[in-house]
Length: 268
Ligand code: AMP
Ligand code: MG
Image (cartoon, rainbow, N blue to C red; front, top):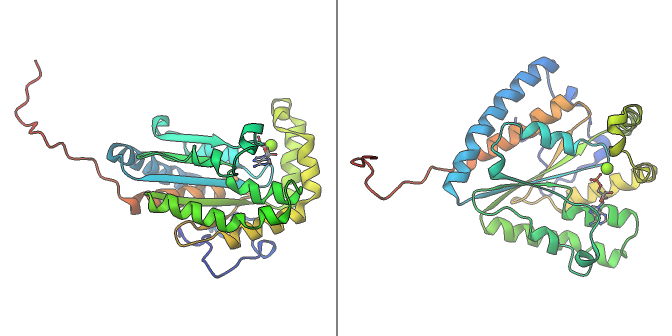
């Protein structure tokens, strides 16, 4: 259940052959999925304080998608009810001059979660092999070695106690059109619309190739990609939350013992 969307190292995926429709993976209807989602999210809500109290392990969740792919919505829905004290969300925008003056992982490394924390990346170091590649912001001789550099970086994080989950939210070009249109139709969503998004939409096919290469080059045992069918938000939320809750169960954080004898303490 939690592995159906996980990519295995050495088994490259073709995104255009991979369904964007949650309906293809779920027998029940939307209402059933939503109630299951809430139950699984409750597990997440209960496991997170144990991770925080234990204060040893770290969980990093990376979200990547095309524009309007649902990264913001996923974060809002999946973490609702989780204690914000234990979660750090970082949204990566176009780099500042200072960031550009450093290696591409410099700003990323500063944002990775510390002990007991869950870090969520809304966009990430993968932009440096996505937008940067598709728009020729640097030559191939610079972005191509980044796959290997990223694998080494993620290995370092994993060796230092970080469990890594990477979700690519897979939507169809038609679904993106509908979501852009919804942003245009609703004045409260205008702020989410940018003309740049339309320029990127024209390069849809190039982006798919870049996403595919990112997934196939950077799926490792220690930091796998999950390709989540994301046209239906209710399925996307359920599928991602299942993986997170399951992963936290596997991490099995424990409340620390207090070495002092507390049994005879009287609070005056
Ligand atoms: P949004 O997530 O809609 O707020 O948009 C953030 C923008 O920042 C997107 O257009 C990204 O492609 C862009 N961005 C993020 N990281 C990078 C990067 N490393 N290089 C260039 N552009 C980036
Ligand atoms: Mg945007």
